[in-house]
Length: 157
Image 1 (cartoon, one colour):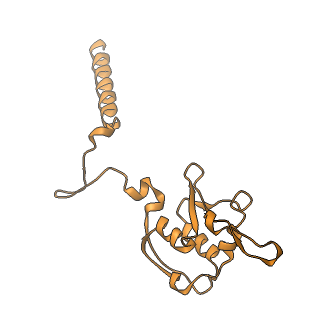
Image 2 (cartoon, one colour; image 1 turned 180 degrees about the horizontal axis):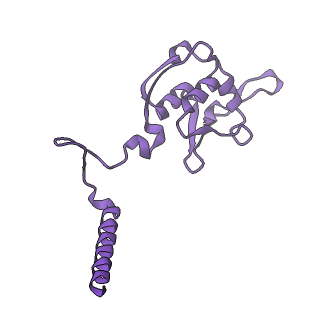
Image 3 (tube, one colour; image 1 turned 180 degrees about the vertical axis):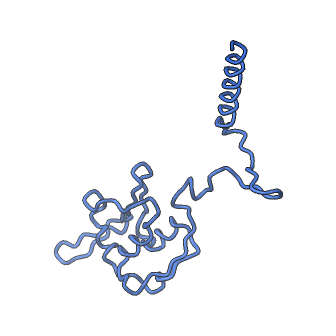
């Protein structure tokens, strides 16, 4: 009986140590994972999985999408990111979001999501990314901020 108990304890401890060995992974020595006799796959995350805005997309916007804001909303679907609340964004952001979607932007890609967002916004806007909260927004570049007081357009260069 004592011999049987020792054998059971030995078997249990061996099984436990084997499970620990298999569950422990050393990040610095990542090895390819064999999925077949002649093929293997990487166990590392892709660049798009590490940087969500670097994912390559290809998209044709339906005719129902009429504004840049609607197009940005479609782009951000399933990306893990969302547009920041307009209450905390650049006060001029409504100008961009309400702008009509140009015909040339109706078909995008293959292109990274980041580049698609900056393409839709144009060179007058800076893409602002909050990776902690996974929010995106746009700030109007300083040299394009205008004052419309007294029906005069004055550039703040």
